[in-house]
Image (tube, rainbow, N blue to C red):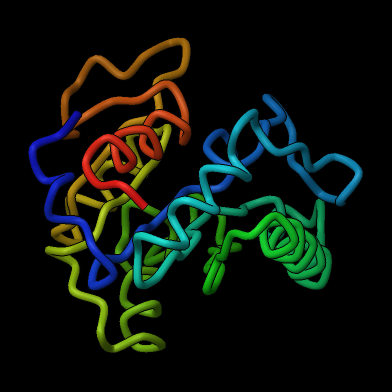
Length: 187
């Protein structure tokens, strides 16, 4: 458990990466349609717990498949609407999804670790305070994004694990973060 977890209340914001954190990542490919979108185990019940604890829940995701022409922005938006609806039906909440369609090779792109998506979230929800925000991600760019914005950072461990330590805690999945919140305060 991380030291700051006892401070989390509805004035806090949770930022989540998508692929590898919420849904199963397709290695060497992209999730381009709802048939390919598979929630990771215990994600939906975890999002239900997060909805009761966090004031805002935002997803921030790099989607360069759009920039590569492998999917359209309309396909990405349809996929995100599907994800949001599944979460809502399970009692959870995602307030908004932010994605960057830029290629990693484009100069001045909006991809994480650039904090462009965090700034968009703050513009949409002015009450967001990055020092009272948690970024949960499974890649170095996710973790650096959180750090660059001044957030607390939690790493979802995968193989191969990130050896660098730009995070405050590590979890095997979102259910572990949900367990930390439940251990800290009863609902």
